[in-house]
Image: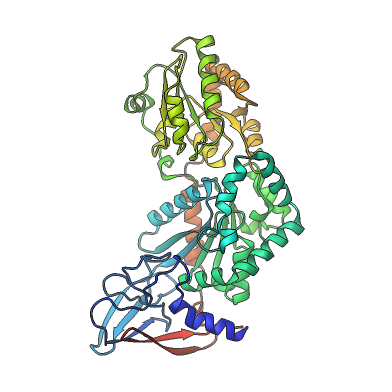
Length: 514
């Protein structure tokens, strides 16, 4: 084990080129001074592997690296994010320095659009709250840090999402402790070295997980490397009414839950009160502030000003029977409310075939059909109610905009809790099939007082500042925690000579404990 760690920590970090995760021009000079010798180190005797600033890679361009035409990088700095890394030209006696930032590695996976959206929302809030003090990298732990079998999990998820029965079986299997342990041990056996290389390369001060499967294995790697106490680990739960047990790991420093129900659920899995915080679900930046007047937005979006708007969405991938739902709802509105009883906006996401199919429909009421939109906040602010599947992100954003919610579907197990959350809080209901959905929509349109009351309850339940609140607490945890020694300075240091092309580097490589 000692030989394995020494080899991996000393050699592989300088020459790992096995995948597109890391740069292929490691340690190569690009400034034309091929015969010069450089000493690379940090203000605490630590260094980061040399890499070309012109080579793309998973962690390229991060705030902790000195990148650019010179093609080398300095070491990490002090604990307060204000340390200085040094790159020294031994022959010319010149030094370059720059402030150091705290490094945050966010682990997620594109198994549904909500995890990446939450990660991006947290990154935006952290960058805004702590400018030039944090370097946040978002990584898909399966697509970017895992081997061939686990690398395809996002595609497997998309397949299962279209086959609810298969998903139900898969999800149910994950509820049992033995199957969870078997899956995590298998993942660790097949991907330990990949996670280790990523952690030792980026050297995070904090790891933030926004995915239910990103607790056990990363914590296991940190523990086996003996560096768990040097890296703060937090979880941000991105479900609302129900959650997979794998979200809750007693070994994390902090766990952020969006609702009281999930706080209680976390306690069932041995989470302590001091580990838990409740701020809401992190949502996209466009929802952080109040929207403009709905009349102004309807004019901007090309909608009729004095006709109620029913927004129909199916997620970024446009999954679900949107065609049948939209057609049925439009016909029912025309029958009960007349040709101008309401107008419909259908957001098809990236489903281009669905969009084209809907464009050729003959509609009895005004209907606008769009593909993927980047201004969903405006469409929600212009609408009177929304039809959507029970994704937690869309529900949370709808609440912020005060929209009554009609749920058109949910993934068994994973999203059923979200249905209960909407119903129990009086902000919407679930329709089993297109006809029942149409009945619920017409019931809202026919009772403006009830729609207004439901809208107020939704607005009261919304948490527009959740991303900021979580980011602020994360920052406090990050900057208040002191690290007596850096990750690589655990026992002793050794000097490694590394030669690439005609360039000679002298790099300090501290050894890890076994």
